[in-house]
Length: 461
Ligand SMILES: *Cc1c(COP(=O)(O)O)cnc(C)c1O
Image 1 (tube, rainbow, N blue to C red):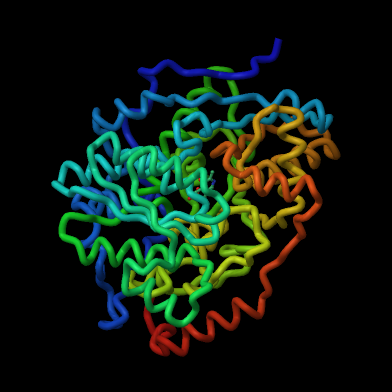
Image 2 (image 1 turned 90 degrees about the vertical axis):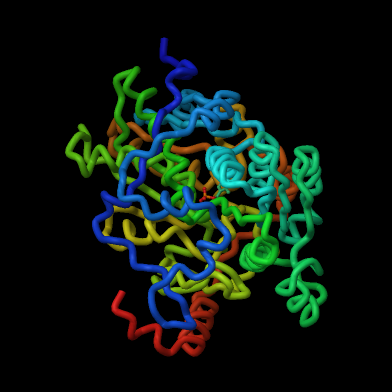
């Protein structure tokens, strides 16, 4: 009988996180302060605890996970690894498909892996409250959950269109004691300015980040917390890949290809970094390929430029070198597939440029079609975001069917879709349309960025 799932014991929760920085093919370009036109951390030291900043620049590969953090992890970790037997049958593929499932956490995604750690370090350094942004509500609910465990207040600026469309994510945050505001809000200078110009503004992650950062900057008792993109966030997610490696080892498997979706890049990095480490340290039994999937409606890596840009719309953050669509990016309202951030993790951007990463972009109709194949054969209703990874895995499995290869495919199911029923309803009623973000819009945004900082091209990084 083929094993359906591989489970680990509690004591097999990883003891350390893996940081990729010492193993990158090139060092990360420094942050740039636009006022100085030179490297500098900008506001970063003012809004993050010291331990997080140390992890952000860590020269150590392995970072010990505090006991207090592991204690909370034990509620849902280790997470199960499934063999997609049902989907293999449906697709009639000779490939073996495995998925690591992070939807078993109380907030329903991989995000508490870092939320709990960030709340812990802020509590240790005497902060009383964290401010953050959230789009679909996954990150806000994970941070609300983490803050509750360490008695921290939690203020969430939720992108207005999601605030209105996903009331139950907001209630989930409030149940875990968070205070939630629709963004842009009148709470901050950044929000008031945008509302004055455009009272109907539907919000974006870039705007909500500006509001949360401003809140932290203007309140001594508060810090800021982010759910993706930053090195320390991706590092915290590596519990996923370390567990998956152990689980596959138990059944004598090693992946030929690893697939994940990318918004900012944290969940996928959490899965593949430990396998990347195998590769660069000469321990990998196979030349594993890493495939990142994104939305054609928000194609940060496949259409975005590798440029210094701000992480937020109000330009409060220092400039970060990354693949970006421009900090003014507002996702098209018809897009239901998640993955809406304008940039992508600097680490992933480098790996992509060094050709160590493959990418695919899918439109929302193909993504929901893939979700339907998956939920019919595997039962679990996936979030729209990991449905991009499912589409990638299906394509890979179908290629194996043509060539007859028995490849081992591993993908990340980073969350369930229980709060995404409106999107599924629209899909089932045939209301979803394919959408591609136009190339001209990217060009426009890049031109604006170059006009804003004409000296950008002269930087030596
Ligand atoms: C936040 C989120 C994402 C996108 O963020 P990454 O940092 O790229 O992982 C994807 N899937 C789910 C379920 C999320 O909650």
